[in-house]
Length: 178
Image (cartoon, rainbow, N blue to C red; front, side, top):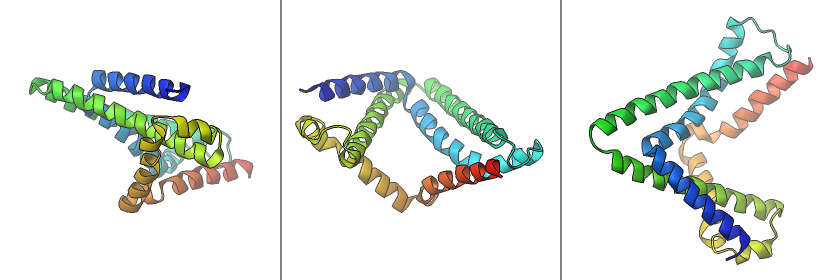
């Protein structure tokens, strides 16, 4: 086992424990909350800018508005998750919730490691000889690219998400420059 494998093993254990402690409902709603908040903030920021009478090109105003909308949506989704989690505890499904959370925590770190492997194979910030020696490289390397390809091909909202985020912030930067 090389250093990369030891670090990955530590992260696998940490994310499993964190997921186990939080439970699958909390893990899912945290994950969904992040993406719903990004999409919602892009859609609703201009309304907040209008309500607060922030003029285009006024420095950080549009970014603050985006951040406010993002945080508000994230909190609302998280609160919904906590409510559902309380219902699950009442119904005596807490052990399944925790085990599912641990498994989802593992999937998150596996995806992150796969993403790092994928980016490293493109940018070469980890030598390819080190990657090939890793126990985790072969089983994990295709997870992120295949997941991203599947998501962008099958989920309408995800198709243009990255492009929409770049466009949103580029347009705000142009407004600030004018």
